[in-house]
Amino acid sequence: MTGNLRYKETRNEEERRKRPEMAAPMVLATPYNSVSVVINGNRRGCTARFAVEAKKSLLCISNGHGEDEVAVSILKEITSMGGLKLEVKAIPLVGMGHAYKRCGIATVGPSRNMPSGGFFFMSKLGLLQDIHAGLISLTVLQWKTIQAWAIKNPNGTLLAVGDLFPLFLAWMASRKCIKVCQMSAGSGIKFIFVGTAKSEYYRCDVDNLNHKLGFFDCVESILFPQCVCLPWERAMMADLNCCLIVPRDSITTASLKKALPPSAESKVKDLGNPMMDNLNPSGVLEFLKKQIPSLCVALLPGSRAPEVYSNWKTILDAVENLLMSPISDQIIFLVPIFSSLEIGLFSKTLLSMGWKFGVSESLLPDIEDSILCTENILSASSDPNGESGILYSFSYKKDNAFLLLTRDLFPDVANLADAAIAMAGTATEQLVGMGKPVFTLSGNGPQYTSQFANAQSRLLGKSVILCSRHSIVGEMTKILKGERFMNFFKENGLKRMGATGASKRIALQIHHLIWHKDSP
Image (cartoon, rainbow, N blue to C red; front, side, top):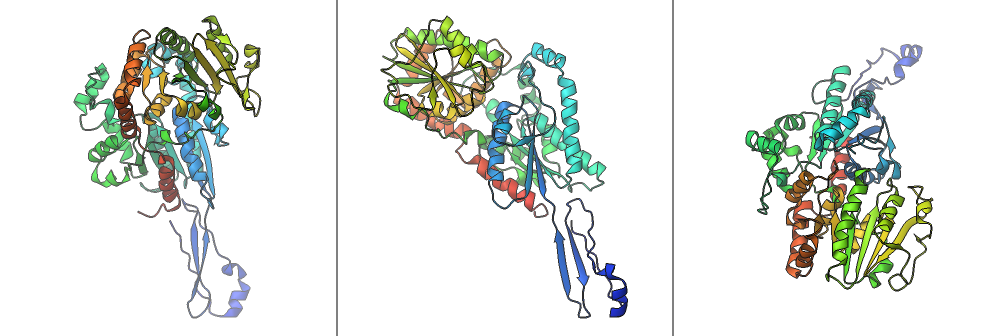
């Protein structure tokens, strides 16, 4: 909004000199902190314009480790664009926001690790544990932080990444800003929604997988068949202050466009899935390419404690069956451990199951300087973050197999692996997007239940193979021996997860909306 002031020309120059304050431009306070001042400076009526433009602000709201990574990928692209005076902050609703801190993005508001790791909706016990740990008070404080930021930055932009909850908070903050700052609907703070949770693939059985939907899923499909996004979600997306909606895949984009009012259809963009960005290997494990035997398998137990440690035991039980099978003369297992986890507990489980610590000279003849191996594994990994500048990686041997336990090397592991055994969320989706088959096991913890495994299978199609510790040998042998299957995984991964570059495409759209708010 631009405010214009016009000074009437004084009758003569003598009166103008007596009132010098009239020559000074006046600054008006506006919702966008920008003002144009027009002064009629001479008798000919020519004008001079002065513009005052405030620095723009953006607050990112995300609810989960995977969502934090998606948000960081987008924010890095935005901040890399030169010449922008943009203040970027984030509020992680789940966990401590390690992804933001790793990239130097400032976080605001309280943060805390909850017993369920953010998956309280999958377990009544998990919900009760979270409430006992202070979930309600934490949520209230986080909402107050977002609300205060919105009122302080009425020219700002909110970026909600995840599901209904961050979208709801962004919508509420926008409404609160309009009320407090006495703005009209459609003016003031804008919000953007990048949806990572909802997909039509959850409901459309395009691969004839015949998975049974849960009770509530069935009710939703009957009551609201037109779109996986429910009416109240679509109402928030149709709000005048919502200026961009990015669903996670093409099929959901098409469905949402049909379900929204015609006036809101244009704000829905099919820009891809940011989960597939930033997966280029660092090269730290390049030396393994010459040494990798006929089969390389990634083991992905997840990222949330404490169930990640029970997931690890379940995966190792399945690995035992692979070791007793003739699937390969040699197998190498690669395990990328998330930075916040205690790597010593993974090692302790390996040692208790008969794995021997040490580097094999035949497999790893040239250990690069970036790989640190130590005889005293438990004491060396007592600090979950390790020493600055040192990558912790440990090797184990059992029968015809080698296992490499690494710290934060998922892109390297994903690129080297032929397949994966997983009980993870985001990592499973990324492996599928890279064209790799993922053999998934269901566990008993709140993070990765049978319900969650079935939902992943519906979302990702036949690239996710549900199996037990006993059936994994037969399933893996059948899949990895067929070239036809491997070509299918590449095509399916591209269809379900999209091509790389989504973060940059989304960032360009956000950049335009932030700096051209008055444009259609």
